[in-house]
Amino acid sequence: MHARELLELAALVAEHGCVLIGGSGPIPARSIEAYWSASRCRVDRWQREIKRSAAQSPAETAKPACPHNTSVRGVIEEVLTGEVLTRVWTAVMCAYDRHHGTDLMEPVARSVLSAHTEARHRVLVILAASSGMPAEEAVRLDQLRRRSERWTDVLLGQMAALGDVGEFAFDPERAADFAEDLAAHAAGEGRCQVWPLMMSSMRACFRHGLAAVSPNADLNAKIAASIVSLFPPELFDAAGVPESLWLVRMAQTTSVAEGLIEEMLLS
Image (cartoon, rainbow, N blue to C red):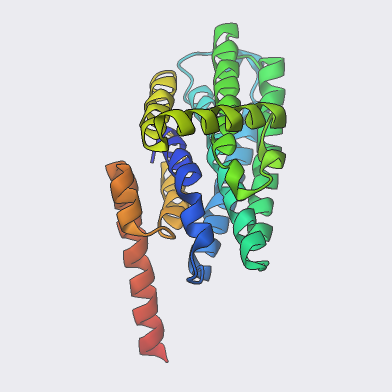
């Protein structure tokens, strides 16, 4: 799954997270474990690739056609754009525990966010030093960082009704401003009109400038599946969920069913 599709999932979670939080059914531990496992595995891959990149000589990393150089750029893109979903989903998981008086999701969410934040710090060090990459490439990636941060705050602003989500924003004041703007537009035009405009704007913002293939597409898909599986299917159907997210949802549902059948046979 491409990093761009995780951005769309982040927007869907921001819009419909209240459905999950307000639900009365239990959250499957299997989905929470899958989110943690895939997220930590992805961070481990990022760290190894970043470490290998740091070990390369400046002459090697500066080569545009170098496969290693291309790989680390893909990792940087995943770290920067993937943090949008990580922060939004952490806000939802923490809000769920607060609403239900449980301690089920927040520890996992904060652990994943902490690891992602550390990976981001390493990426920022690379960008600040340029680490042998062409100046224009460093500028492009820094622009991607800024766009990702801004959209994180937009989506968190959209989630203001869930409670205090400012701690997950890059700029809490900006998120609060977005929350006020969105509330005003929703009152005047109706939320059903604001939402499609936001999705179109996000897609346009990230349509270009990302690598054709994400280096950790398999783990991106597992992370997406662990999240999408928690929502009712009719909700995402109405939201116009991308086909790729439906495919990972179906795969996750099949995996859970197979696991339950295996447990029944062994009992």
